[in-house]
Image 1 (cartoon, rainbow, N blue to C red):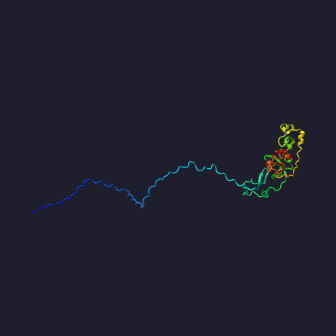
Image 2 (image 1 turned 90 degrees about the vertical axis):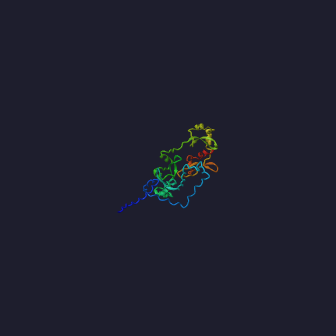
Image 3 (image 1 turned 180 degrees about the vertical axis):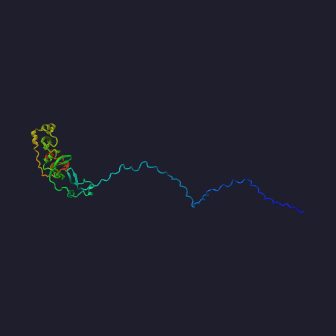
Length: 295
């Protein structure tokens, strides 16, 4: 009898025991960017030491006032050097002439409009030059208009009719001048011997129509009778008038001049009187002398 054998089923593998705790959460998804680069190597030398301790003394306080005050205004420019005296053309009311001086425009030397001589100036501008005749002509001195005799007039006067042979012609031709001869009047003055008197003549200052009017205003000028007064006026010796020629546009006159050594005022007859003496010119020596000295 055949024996039937039942096949043996192999034993299943043994399942391990489960872990005591559940696994942690699943791993998150990977990051989109890679991790940053690793930290660089440390420096070879250590960092410098800490800041030193603060200074022992505090900074001094600021000065209470500024050291130097600012200049209120800029300094003025330096004074320009004076110009050289040259001949140059000048325009006046009568025309153009060449004159000498330093009152020309500062730009004229660079333009060639100044000259060393009058002849050079006159040639350059086709003007008259040379010696002038002594004539009477109108002029002004210290604000006073007058007719004078000389050659100091501009060349334009020769063609404009401003030159005359006599003072009277000059005065009559120039309407704004009064050259009528002075009238004799009574006036107070000091006569020879230092006496005061009212005399008749050409007055230098105060004047009266009669001796009585003069004596009324100046009683000390009439201590004696008219006869005595008239006699005393002729006792002063006459002074001889020296020869004189007009020059530089000025006529001959008596004028006062101070002598520094003696502080004495003398009366000089000449034509070289200074311009400041224009109001102190006299035709008679005594009129000049007795004005500044005891007669």
